[in-house]
Each structure stands twice: as structure tokens, then as C-alpha cells.
Length: 136
Image 1 (cartoon, rainbow, N blue to C red):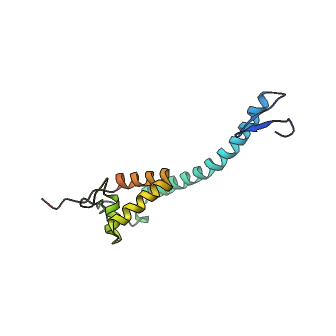
Image 2 (cartoon, rainbow, N blue to C red; image 1 turned 180 degrees about the vertical axis):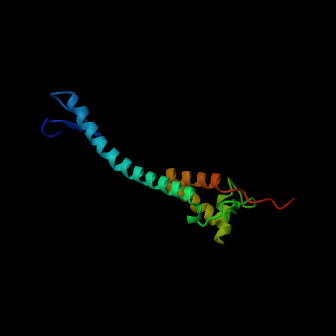
């Protein structure tokens, strides 16, 4: 349709010479297509999650998980090997690696893929508790 009316694409936004409103129509059709690709699977997954939640609430015996116990976190941020948040020290302790090696790899990954890796580091910082102090 865009080719038939000599519309030009400028970063996924179309502009047409003859009827000006046609560019907005073609742009809307392109974005609606991508919106459907993204929203339909997420809506299906959301509905499945809602159905599973309602079934498990109606019949708790289907799920054999005891939710009354307090979960014990196996991964705790380190107090002793803490430079910023203790995340690198905890990773090093968990897998018996040298702390300095984990810190160097962390800095390299933060430089190579900064957005994703810094978001992941902040998530570790907020999601995992600091280990208990032993000087009580």
C-alpha cells in the first residue's frame, strides 16, 4: 500500500505526498502489527497464569508446597568481601572462586554490556539479603 501511493519510510514512520493522512494510516498499520505480536502472547500467558492461580486457590491440595514456612535464602550477599554490595563476594563464596577474579569479570561485563548487566547487578543487590552478622 505504501509503495502504491509513493509513501516514504522515515524510521518506521511513513509520509505520503498525495493524501497526507495516508502516511499516518500506514504507520498505524505497521505498529498495530507489532503490537499484536507482543500483546497476544503476553495476554495468553497472563490468562494461563490467572487460571492456574484460581485453580490452586480453589483446590490447594493440587499444589504440594507448604507456604507457611519461611523460605531460607541459600544465596546471601557477603559482609566480609563487600566492595559495593557484596554481590561479587557472594558469587565467589557460592562457587569457590577468587573474589578478585569475580570482580574483574563483573567490571568487564559492565563495560561490554552495560545496560543489561547493571540491571542484573542491581537486581541481585535488591533481591538477595545480606548475610547475618556473626558478632552478636
